[in-house]
Amino acid sequence: MITLQHVSKCFDDLKAVDGVSLSMQEGTVFGLIGTNGAGKTTLLSMIAGIIKPDGGEIFIDEKRVEVRQGSNPDVYFIPDEPYFFRNGTAKDMEKYLSTVYPDFATEPFYEYLEKFGLEKNRKISTFSKGMQKQLAILCGLCANTKYLICDETFDGLDPVMRQGIKAIFANHMELRGLTPIIASHNLRELEDICDHVGLLHRGGVILSKDLLEMKCNIQKVQCVFQREEEQKKLQDLEILKLEKRGMLSTITLRGSREEIQTAFSAFDTVFFEVLPLSLEEIFISETEVVGYDIKKLILN
Image 1 (cartoon, rainbow, N blue to C red):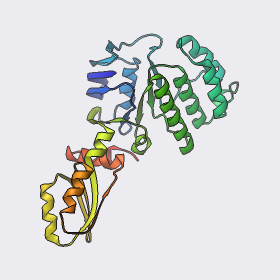
Image 2: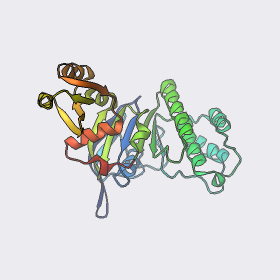
Image 3: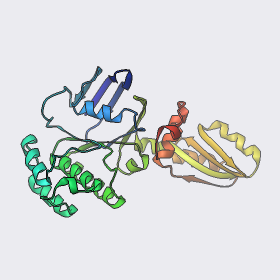
Image 4: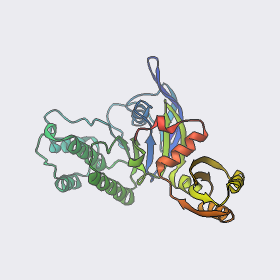
């Protein structure tokens, strides 16, 4: 497990990370979201031991993270702009990483290269951005570390490749207990892979919640009331958002699906239906409750 306790970091007068406390459970996918400049990269770099916090502490499996020369054998960090040797090839990267990470999976690495159509002896500088992203991910996976920290990992990948990479992540989680931590500014990118999501804004955490729990506890209902006065019965429910267009009401409420269905079954409606919410809609609802306008915080 990765634990952050009141972690802060400043660059001159800029407070990039401001008193962040988080827990990232092993064996799950933690999604860290926020706009560019929210502090995601700085936070990930501190977890990876690349830069030192000005305040607070970070623990990985109860060991305090310290800035160190060389690599942490438990953590592999894939930055937004991956670093490769100048004029280097994929084969050169394998030779280097094999000396740094003792459990580097050499044979699977070359098998992945072949499946992905990445030539081992071709200069990486001639790869497209998407191909370089693929290679960086393969390097991270084959390093065989327990934690894989990914900064905007899927940026530059086409939709088919994104799904393929996510499937490989799931396979490594099942086979060897990999714990991915994925930062992104795009909610839709993380919706089908994350177990837990944290929202970072201006260096601080607005909320950190289990995704399934959020989905089970917030519902969206579309309905048409038979009479206008029927809408007054909604005051007994915990409404997060209510929009009305003509006769159609769209209501976001807190509660289980069964609770909401039971409540609306007792109302006099022309019709009602409980609809699934996207991760984006859930976060909009959650953050508006605490006074933030999510539409201004997250880029789609």
